[in-house]
Image 1: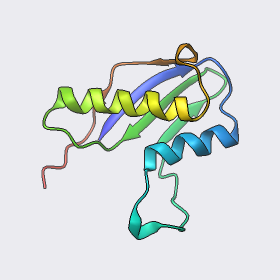
Image 2 (image 1 turned 180 degrees about the vertical axis):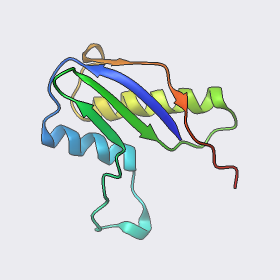
Image 3 (image 1 turned 120 degrees about the vertical axis):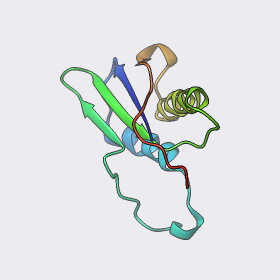
Image 4 (image 1 turned 90 degrees about the horizontal axis):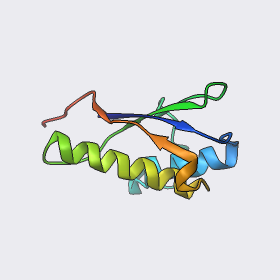
Amino acid sequence: MITVPGTVRQPLEEPARRALLAVVHGADPEEVGAQVPDLDVLTLDESGGTFVLRLEVDAPDRTAAGEAAVDLTRRAFAEAGYEADAVGVGAPVVTGIDVG
């Protein structure tokens, strides 16, 4: 589990939020057509313009996991309609490791 903090320079409207979460959640063939819960993947403080994304990524080490999480964060915001300069992404932090 990687936690990615950041800032947004425009509001995250509901359609954009859904698009962002669709990228982050991906498509699980076992859940096609099912409602995927938010599961606190995204925490947003709209008044302060800050967010935290909690992402699961597969990677061989912490560095690669952080890079994958940042890439996923940028891709998700791009899919939600944000220009690259409208989102500031902070340093990712490893908050959990599944070795099984």
